Image 1 (cartoon, rainbow, N blue to C red):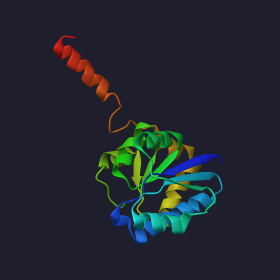
Image 2: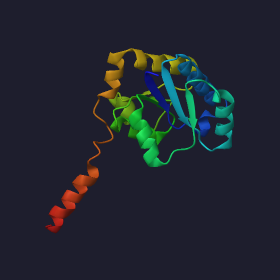
Image 3: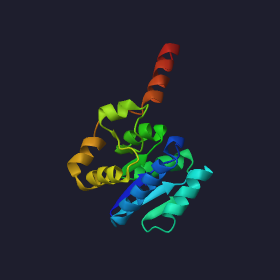
Amino acid sequence: TGVQTCALPIYRRESFGAGLAGILEAVRRIAARGDVEVVLPVHPNPTVEAAVTRALAGVAEVRLAAPLRYPEMVRELDRCDLVLTDSGGVQEEAPTLGKPVLVLRDVTERTEGVDAGVARLVGTDPTVIFAATAELLDDERAYAAMSTVANPYGDGEASRRIVEHCRAFLGA
């Protein structure tokens, strides 16, 4: 396939029921484009696992994966072109790798990403999710507008700076 879309992870309790069903329907529609591979690590919560398996098992272009350890998740984020998630942590991590984030929630505590333009709240309506995904996949300008913004969560150099300051303070 030409493009890869990652849905990492989908597990929040407020999405259970109709919200999760809407997200999974959107994933089906995205995969049906035929030019997208959806990688979805399945959260071990039995409610999530059952819904995901029921909705997406056997769907072409959807790869259901076991939950990922952190290094594997970062590698998958780095490989993908676009992230769909309801995870707060992933909302912070994906922009570090220049990945636009569609937040599968109506509200987020990570408002910096939305304010900076690296993340967009799309909720759980499958039509809205599909339209936002299609826009980013099909419109280079829209994609660039979200993927080339300065990361509001930092530049990944904090640990190096801390070491430098400690060495300077200690005279090393």
